Each structure stands twice: as structure tokens, then as C-alpha cells.
Amino acid sequence: MLKEARNVLKTYFGYDDFRKGQATVIEQTIGKQNSLAIMPTGGGKSICYQVPGLVTPETTLVISPLISLMKDQVDALTSLGITATFINSSLSNEEQRDRMAALRQGRYKFIYVAPERFDSDAFLRTLDSIPLSTIAFDEAHCISQWGHDFRPSYRTVVSRVKQLATIPTLMGLTATATDEVIRDLQQLLDVSDDHVIKTGFARDNLTFQVVKGQSRSAYIEEFVRLRKDEPGIIYAITRKQVDQIHFSLKEKGLNVSKYHAGMSEMARKDAQNAFIQDDTTVMIATNAFGMGIDKSNVRYVIHYALPKNLESYYQEAGRAGRDGAPSDCILLFSGQDIHTQKYLIEQSEMVEDKKKQEYGKLQAMVNYCHTNQCLQSYVLDYFNDDTGAEDCGKCSNCKDDSDKVDRTKEAQMVLSCVKRMGERFGASITAKVLRGSNDRKVLQFGFNRLSTYGLLAHLKEKDLVEFIHFLVAENYLIAEEGKFPVLRLGKRAVDVLKGSAPVMMQVAKVEKRETGEYDEILFEKLRLLRKETADNQGVPPYVVFTDKSLTEMAR
Ligand code: ADP
Ligand code: MG
Ligand code: ZN
Figure: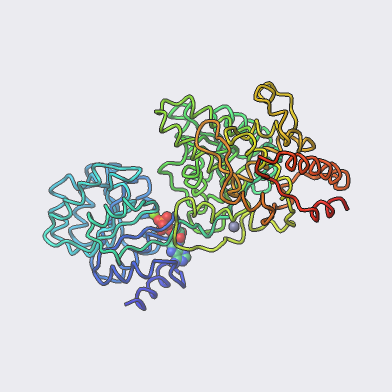
């Protein structure tokens, strides 16, 4: 069977090998077993029902809640010489009748319909009258009330299908499904545990990058200019940002469109169509753009500003490379955006608990920008993806071959400071204390009397805050959920404080410094700190420096 499937893959689609998970789903379907396939966007879900549909003589029915995508799918099949059509509300009554008649005559191998079609008894009778091998539920998460995009009309389809004289083989396909949704779908579509195929969320053709410390407008301008023939999306947070970026790129003669909720419906539609039809190459938009839009050849998605959480980020960035070709997902990070996002949460009408949750999700997004871990695997960990993907080898962290520098001593200072401040304050005031600021709050709490006061005065506040974010991202510190996340020592802190584990950081992320002078200052401060620690017998020595490490530094 699989050999035949392989032939079909080669002769019709021109591909040599199945992608991860495809062969299993196809084999099960040909063997008339129901399946549930959870594969990432661009993972090749269509092939999972298209190949069995071509191997078996009967018709395959595809249910899709996205009318906009049906035509593309049908056009693609038709261009390969496969008989296919769609029936939905975008057609006139007459066209619908014609296609139904052709369907009854068995003229189609594939037929695409929207869930609403099942409201009609006539449609059900037609299905009963033709040989049907498989019903594929695309975007199956919409069937489940636990899914993020639940459509009640889609759920009733399942019970209607079960009214058919003979129930064909069923297949559910989705890119996003929590365990809850999976269980629900298994029950609805009669899929046994070993027929659930989950390939994980990894998007192998995407390269993730976080860009810091550069002028964002200059970065975008150069990027778009260098790749001016490739379709791309640039996401900004506010309408004003969208207008500004659009204006400046257009002024430079680049072929750009824009999209945000402040534009008229007509203007938005025009912009969208121009982009989808490749009349303009770059779309600058707020997150209002993209839902239900299928443009498979987007070569890059740039986030001009920090998204509110990783769920949104991965979904928006994931609009790149749906055709499976290599594509870039770039996030331009600026610490300022954290405040903007916090402000948006604060201003929203969510209940307090929900706000707290959102602040927590924002923190994870910020951590993504500061971790040294592989970015793809960071995201997979966040989604509890247990498919065991390895580091991607091409994200900005994997690619960062600059030397790691030892920042243990500075980390010890930060951790000690957090501890001495009673683990009740956030990154910004902690940075102020370490820099020896005369800030009102610092003085009010008497933090200027702490031994850690002013220890890192030679660092810029911005860089120090960045460093604290890094320590959070790497689990040396915990930033508790809340609008002003409170810093506490994380699970890796103790070993650092004891001096038994180093804190290494990629050098590209460290502010350049004058080494000689710097080390001298550091040495003097450590000496004082050590003395203070020794004087305070009752206080646990959060920083333990051996004489050896001090002599080493003095050299
Ligand atoms: P999904 O529905 O999972 O988002 P699609 O079915 O639209 O993804 O497929 C995405 C792209 O991958 C399409 O261009 C498709 O032709 C391509 N593709 C699918 N399977 C394979 C394969 N086995 N080898 C190469 N390309 C494939
Ligand atoms: Mg699809
Ligand atoms: Zn990586």
C-alpha cells in the first residue's frame, strides 16, 4: 500500500519522501482507520488526505471552515490534473446546483465544503448516493469547544456525518491542539489512542532571530531593501507605528501595503488583496492582519515590537514559510516595549486574575528575548512539546558563535542584592540599587545602606536591566507574575552564590568594556563586599569568595 502511496506522491506532487507523520496517517487512512493528525502549519497536512484519496477509487470529502482557502486548494489540485471542486456560499445558487449534480455523477475525486453545507438534508442524501472513502476535517480544533476557535456549526457536522448510511473513514487535521482538545476530538471522531499522530510544533523551515541594540527603523529599511522581491510581513503594536513604518518605507520607494483596524474596510481589503496577489511585497500591519489568510510564500515575518505573549508570537511568526521553503522570523527587541505591553494589559478590561496571567505570559515572551537557549526549543518547551526536537542549529542563539564570557561575579552581585532587598522588588529598582542611584525609592527603603549598593555602578542601567532579564530567562532569578514582577532567587541561584557554578553569557550580548580598569574596580568592590559579609556574622554569607578567586582577579 505504502509503495502505491509513494508513487502517487511522486507522480502527482513530485515529492520523493514523506514528511514526518504523513506516511503513518496515510497508511491508517488507506487501511480505513480513523486518524487525528496534529502537525505544525506548513507541515503538509493536505497530503495526508490527498494521497489516500488518489490511491482509493472513491471520492474524498474535505470540510474546511476557511472558505478563503478552499479555492486555492482546489486550484492547486486542478493544476495537477486532479478533479476537484468546492461548494460554498461564495457560489451562485446555479453554480452550486451544477456542482452538486456533477458530484452525484462521480465527476470529482475531491470535494471541499464548509461546515454549513451539512445543514442541508439534500446534501446528506447526495453523500449517501455516492461512493465516499474519507471525510477529512481540516482545522479540526474548531470542532472542539475547548479549541481556541470553536465553531458550533462545525461541531454539529460530526453528528450529521454519523447519520450517513455508511460512515466513511474520518480524519481530523489541526496545527494546534491542547491535550483537552485532542481527547475531545478523539471521542468525536472515534480515533483510538494509537491512531493519533502528533509531530510536534517545530517548524523546521523557519529560522528564528532576536535582534537587540540596533536602530529598528534602519534595520527594517535595509532588510526590506536587500530582499525587495520577497513577500514579507512586518508587525507593529500600534496603528501609529504601522503608519510611520509604512510612510518611511514608501518614501524610500519600496513596494509596501499597510493594514490596521483604523482603516476603512475597503482600504483594508484592497491592501490585503494587493499583498496576497503579490502586487505589493511587504505588508506592515497590526495583529489585526493575518487571521484566516493563506499566503504560502511569505519569506519573512519581522516583529518591529514585542508581542504580548509567545502564543501570539508563534502564530504570527508562523505565517512565514507555509509552503515549507526556508523563511525568517525576526523579532526586534527593545526594552521599552515591555512597558507598552504592560500598559495595554493594565488598560484592558480583564479581571485581575486574568491580568496576572497575562503579565506572566508577557514575562515568558521577554525571557525568549534574553535566553541563550535555542529559540525554537525555547518555544517548544513553553508549549510543553514533548516530541524531543533537537536544537535547530540556525536560530540567532544557535548561530551565535561568539565566545561565552564568565559573568559569574556580576551575577553573584545581582543575586545577593535581590536577596538583601528581601526578594520583594522588581528589576528596575534592583538595577538602581546596584548602580548606586539616589532614586527616591532607593533612599526611602534604605537600600543605599546595603553592601550591594553601587556595586555595578560602571554598567549602564539599560544593560544592567538586560542582564537581570538574562538571569531570569536562564532561571537564576524568578520574576513573579504581576504588573511589576518581583524578583526572587531561582533554582540555579544557590550554586552561583556558593561559587560552584559559573554564569556564562554570549559575548555579543555583553556591553563592550575596558577590561583592565574594569577589573580593578570590580576587585575593590568585591573586597569590600567580602569584608562586609564577614563583619555581619548573623547574616548568611550570600556571596562567598575564596581568596583564590580574589587573587586571580587582582592579577
Ligand atoms: P498544512 O496544511 O499542514 O499547513 P500544507 O498541506 O498546506 O500544510 O503543505 C505545506 C507545503 O508543504 C505545501 O506547499 C506542500 O506542497 C508541501 N509538502 C507537503 N508534503 C510534502 C512532502 N512530503 N515533501 C515536500 N513538500 C511537501
Ligand atoms: Mg492546511
Ligand atoms: Zn536554535
